[in-house]
Amino acid sequence: MTSKTIIFHIGHGKTGSSALQSLLAKNHEALKQHGYLYPYHSNFKNATRGFVSAGNITPAKDPDWLQNQVVSVVNTSNEYHTFVYSAEALFNRLAPLFQQYRHLPKSWSIKVLLAVRNPIEMMASHHQQAVKRGGYSGCLKQFMEEQNYKVRALHNSVRVLERLEECGIQYSLANYSKVRMGITEFFLDEMGLAGLINASQEREKLVNRSLSAQELSLVAFINTVFGPKVGFRLSDSFVNELPSIKADNLYIEQGDVDALIRNNTEALLQVNKRLEVGMGLTFDYVPTVSSDIQKSLNDEQVEIARNLLFGVSERRKRRMQGLKGE
Image (cartoon, rainbow, N blue to C red; front, side, top):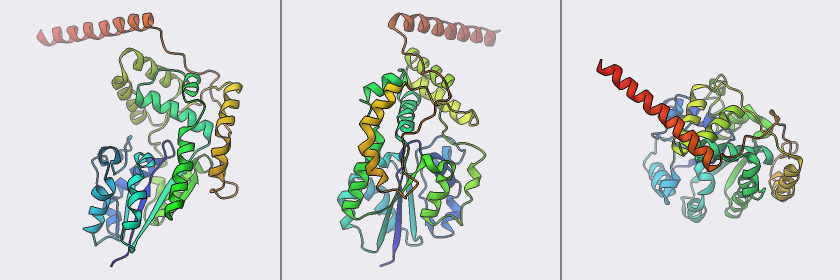
């Protein structure tokens, strides 16, 4: 039976995944000529433009994604020796791989690629993502309190690494906070693609950047007044159309920093045991602005803003219809 390698890049979030996915999508056809298949996905339309994308596999919509989106492709594509899948959604949906790994052909080599990030940075990124794509409108302090000062991705990373080790699945681990822009090169090298793809293609344009403090405040306001769908569209427009705007780290009070350290130290130590010396996670975090975003508006404020903004929108619509009728 022909030997095949299957690589799963699983994120996690805000560790350079979109930049890697953009490169892989742009080089889809070239990779095929060298025996690598990065299976086509509808997300390629955004990925090839350097926009926010979700990789080339959709585990959230398919509980048996391993059989339906991977095994079926590998079994019918003998012209390729390596199959590459990338999706942050895999990070929390690896159960099919853990359950079925022992039953996959012995000639198949499985490798999982995972990036982690300094915990306080990651907590701030979780808050950003909640505002950008989840309709959240609260400040960072409120978000941390609601999370009980536990960095979800860090604790989940420990569980993922333990399960990979229990199953005997090969993995590579990187600390995004240490390598930053070099994360793409790291993963391309782990995939065996360092000589085939030029990572500098994405250097001139950041992919799926974080928001500035002003943008974050505006999206949080829009989430409150107009709802999450409008906030989602606005944040994606900022990220896709203005990729060079510098992101901000919001201010965190010392008491909150202390709580983050208390609730995440053990998980940090567990991850660091698996990272190379000098590449470990730390609790370093440097604010770039002197304040957090404003707290959510109260109900009366929301009603005033909604009435005003919807009124402006309706008057503009009527004015445009009147001009068309002239």
